[in-house]
Length: 157
Image 1 (cartoon, helix red, strand yellow):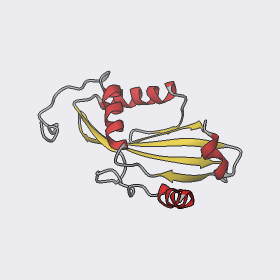
Image 2: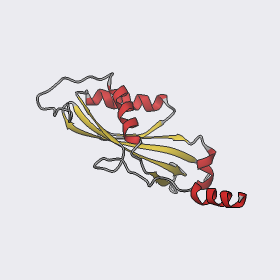
Image 3: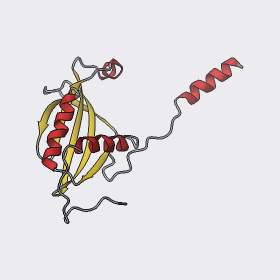
Image 4: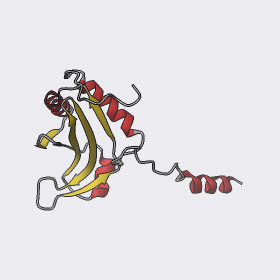
């Protein structure tokens, strides 16, 4: 009897709800911010990342790429490289003068900055979209933009 219970526990232990991508057009965690100064927000977002240990690898008006060394050996061991990095790629899509859509992509990078760099993408889940929205809203509080008649109103408001 004890073996049957143990076998059942082992067989069903790996069962979990199926992967649910975020319910967004891109299939990645994303959020649209309204009534925000886009240039100020971009600077505050980079500051936020640097304050959390990330190094800005690349930035432009439309994208911010930031990375930091991985801290968890649970994830670094299977990747098989001495140098590992968590990388965030944030795409900033201006929709109007004071509206920006932010799409988040993430990945684990082996051999960052070399010719042998390899990125293992991390798929966002449906749980990531609300967390990203809350985080971006906190960063955007510092950069209020002017309300404009050309800026679309948030859906449902």
